[in-house]
Image 1 (spheres, rainbow, N blue to C red):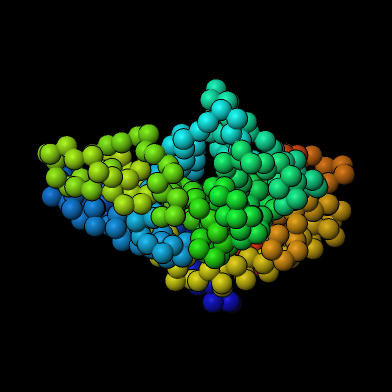
Image 2: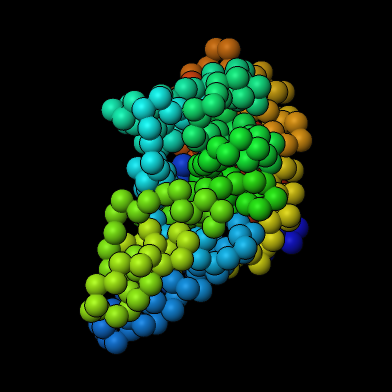
Length: 376
């Protein structure tokens, strides 16, 4: 047993199925379930008396999230409802001019397309590089950038192919041109290491319910202090201001950093679950998690190839992720997913491909069982 397998007992899902669908929903660990229950019990039995404790918990979880991102300051991390919420906050808050453009990719999940597409009514063009054999080439992105490009908006890891973009390279390209680099981090954060300073990331946002193994309805929004003044809050509430704990005075000076985008009562259940999951991820360690996921995903790739599948996901250093997407010349991906579901194995089908997405607590024995269930 490797060092990470000791965390398996924290995930109840392992007791009744082989779960390799973290790119869809990451199962809650038992500690997150207990955290949600504790908040519910506090509200049920003490009502307002536990409110300050819940506020303090927000601060603790914010600090853990900042550590995971390697952010310079905790206030650069805010809490949002989900990835779509985070991206919409940014897209709506920029001072656009007719003729401006945004560059992205045509293989994005809709969350990272619609907020930019809607800017067409302000004369903003959304240009999309094409996916080529499961990849989004840097050169294709760069070719779409001109002197009116204000934002490059890209997923760190593509949901349907597992392709991981080189954040540092793209971020440096954007930094040199004064372009805002906005990253949809939902398919990487919690599975792969990221350092927002090293990687030149201006904005990254991610829901908690995938690789972070948190609950639905809560997410993270990191905005670097370097660019915070470019994004105007379009949603403002009582918790957006510096003296938010004081209910009178009406002093509309914003809180530092991304905290200003928290515009009302927080989701204490989501915060509690996310805090419990972040504790596990930080304790397990980003390097160890990435190493385990490389072993598991490489083994899946080899087994798929042996069984006649064509692996779409890039597997070279810097491009691979924990998502393995593949096609078969004769077999229907939805039928494959159902076949495995009947055997209590969870994978998914996306974009005409099967998608297998293990997490760090999965084992090589489980991989062998998945491959055996796929057949020859």
